[in-house]
Image 1 (tube, rainbow, N blue to C red):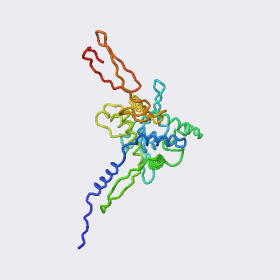
Image 2 (image 1 turned 90 degrees about the vertical axis):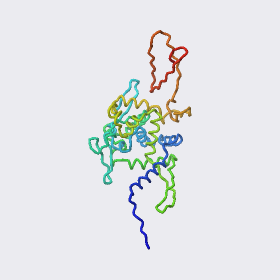
Image 3 (image 1 turned 135 degrees about the horizontal axis):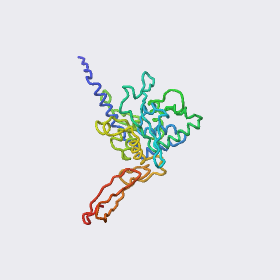
Length: 320
């Protein structure tokens, strides 16, 4: 008597479970050695183009954002000390339809509203931008030609360089940098175990960018604003101006805490400090004595955000 196996009534659920296994097998972020190896490769003169679009990834852009914007979309904010904060209003993305890329405008109802945001280039990404512009000028391109170029393009003209093309380039770079692929144990339909190699991709750098942003002090709202995550119903929609200059500068101030362009890697000095910090997180203990008979105001100034904790001196009755 022949028995026929019943069809799987939940193929979609099985597919989702398999996808979860793949996601859980990937590393959370690059370690210091891997990150150093990757940027050492990108710092080579012939990889300046790749360094530029990778810098945009570390600023929070995804490949669809990079391919959708042009150099003419870049805006410059000049701070009082002469520093420059570069931002890009993400109002276009590319998507692939029938094997061809098309540009999706923010005015299109299919444009994800939470992807409409102001991208803030990290300070080191701003330095890479200036080097990239010098390279394009050296090729004989005019300012008008450069402004029309997509950020993902290596040179003017030609087809759109989209997410698939950037992913292929990154896989080659990861392989050259010696960053291994993920290997996990799977089972086939007959229940036999086998080993599967999963190549790392752009999602690895996006996870690493998110990790570094958190190390620089990014809170949940800032992460949403950087990477175009889904908005919350309170803080971001009702109270924060995510597109404003003030919030852009506030994010820039935090993101300046880490840079692969740091002149020397700092040794590990404690929790929260990782290789590449331009300035190691510092902790200072201050004693403040009020010798007057009235309250006084104490002002603390620093180039970064401050967390201040106060302790009461019970013996003397003063705050220190």
